[in-house]
Length: 181
Image (cartoon, rainbow, N blue to C red; front, side):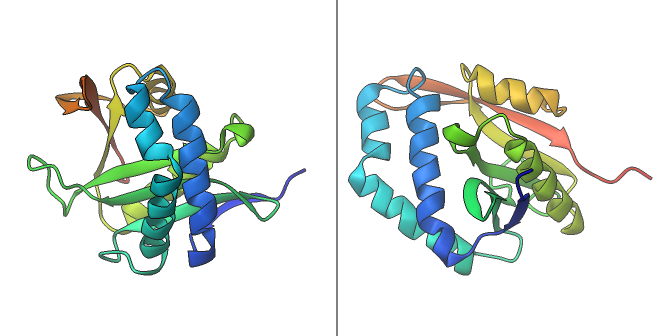
């Protein structure tokens, strides 16, 4: 049986996190984003920028409530999750958090890593006093919406359209995470 778990990310994990992000986006977003946009955000220059950004997130997050976690299997980073206080104007950053990213390496999918990352994020967010967790998903991303829906997430009625050379619609999903007494 594989030795699996979730832990806080370290600077040394940044390259693996960025590599996972690029591989997951190339596969998962290939039918959701315009090809030139996907190439731009997953190309060599973008990969270098993502590595630097994730290294910063691991060692110097903007606040103690910003976290980057990694899923590991036999000491190999196979996925990651990032969460932070919500920044949307209609949300309360003291009570509402945002799942900024949750991605698993496509070669390690369907092994429970995403569920472990989500559970660990929720545990930490509860400790920090958050009551609601939100995330943005592409409206046509059936995989993400199905995964989160199976964990109790639902659209909250908020949507936005990103200009990526053509309009790409996202919806905001949410779930309650407050401990019930």
